[in-house]
Length: 422
Image (cartoon, rainbow, N blue to C red; front, side, top):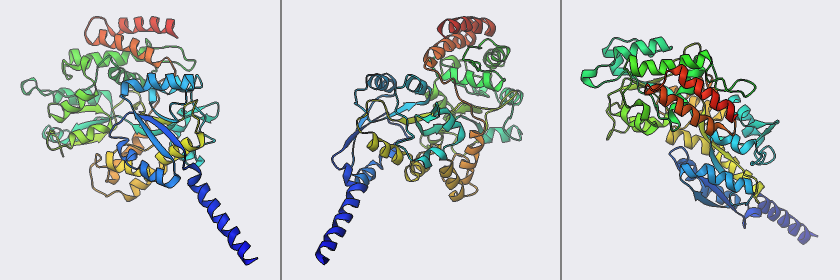
């Protein structure tokens, strides 16, 4: 009897051990992603996940420009090539609306879903089901030169378009080759996001509530006209603006010839690199100024499970790990990337050192500021046709910025094209 009890206990303990990790010991799952500073700290933790669950993770690293087409192809055909995928936020609808993703409610901890900021949870939900989790959140802010502001007697950052324009005019000095403002204007995608922000700030939108295009509304025309005025009349923007992408705006601001820039948080490592930056310790962050309202669009990367995955439970475990407090805290502290989990941001605020600049991920003000930014964010249209919309807007933006057409003419033409597409 005693011997039987010992065997039963041993069998129970062995069964518990198998269920906790070794049940997956022979399982291999595939994670498709593109590498960047935002996810490198998380990738470094994957061996801990493998050890904990006995699940081997095979990495498929793709260039950014390939992730969309490759991910869509495999998910649509349900090949099972990938179990977990990383996708860029604007691409989400191209996966979600056609049903290329597995609903996560059954496979990801409810605690994680409930812990997302509301703006992220709402964006991720179709028909009351969650189809993705934001791996990381990228939000643009206004970065401004505190030294130039102080020397010019400017009390603080602008809060509206008029103040931003006035300050940019004051801090533009052609003799010094110094410009008051730096914006991305490339028709390849970056400029459209800046234009989308201006339209939102003017009280407009790209699509109305029914999904119809409204890009030639008075608000949209006002937004594009303001962009054009900054470049062609005020001349507070560099002549190279119509070609600038994010890489250029980051590097140019770090070189010290601009007073303000609207950029994502991953500009901070560039600005703080003493080898290449002339503005280290000479800048601060503020909300992007608005017209009738402030606001910037949400960006970043999303983690999801594509249709065709043959290892749904294990894939859910990996998503849980990527979104765990351990991984999200390390991601935020090492890279300064913004976590979409409220509890992680609250912990960073509670543990952050006071008195440090907003760009320092170890400082309390960094994460307090982030919560203010999140409260002003909005989403770009959630539609599978966003790439087509971007292309049309890019042409309109380029035509207006280069003076080939007036803002009204450019947007009227864009409106007609989008009506045909949508």
